[in-house]
Length: 374
Image (cartoon, rainbow, N blue to C red; front, side, top):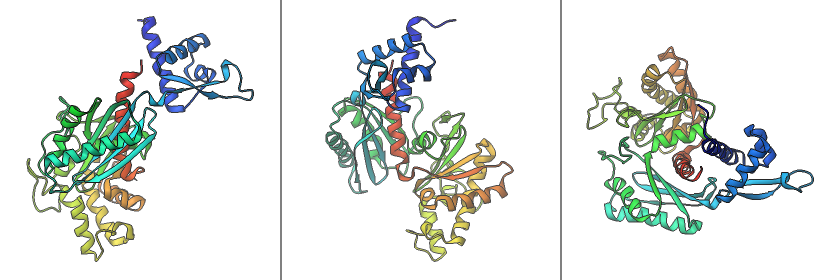
């Protein structure tokens, strides 16, 4: 069945907006070429988008720089402002950006274990409000929060999780109460995967698994270009994966005995100390025996994931993945080749510590565009 005229207009408008988002300012002639639409249709959609306040003339192009065909059209960047939060167990980082994703202001603040739930929440909210003010963001549309823990797929809320500060879950509710904006929350590892998929190490992949190696251990699964959360939102909870070489078996209430015991930051530090290295800079030292031992550990958990999903690519992220870089990734790939018949490329994160914030910003931008774009 052919689309109605109104539906066709909406599809064309959204296509043009996406091109302006991805390619930058374009002339009507360039929009005609990229969309395949007729000149009159492009002229009509440009006029509609200008009337809606989403597109404006940002300059002129071409040798003569004169006439209607020379006008460059771009998205009105301050039509909406976005905020992203990376909520860790002991800190919060904030980025405020415009609709094009251009950073306007950013800041971070430590949140100590002794802060208490109420003061910790207020500290985080105050940081966001201050950063929004510094950015001059008077049209805050969407706020995306990246946090450790499970996200309920039915409600979109952060679940209670053992071992995580109580202020994490309370923070989202307070933001929703205090801000005139849409507030979204997503698992930090999932956001890192979204960022690596769209702007980082997995830009050329439709299928990959991001292995998060930090204070905690987790994974994000991307198949056919889509993030897969699982029936309960727990896809990728590989810290609970039973593996050889641990003290026992994990349980429903704790991942001690699981892959977490081999790969978390504390375990990496202990392994470094056993090799006579300072845990703080062991990964940067390039110490071969230590990196080989760590790669063997990481390959054990990775092989289990690869044998089930066959993603073809694994990205090492989090503090350990970032610090280990290409050298650690190459060693894990070699070890994995001896454990699994499924050929798998292992890559280091391309975004490093910025991955979660960048993923949250992309999530906020998508939410704003879904509402603002026709």
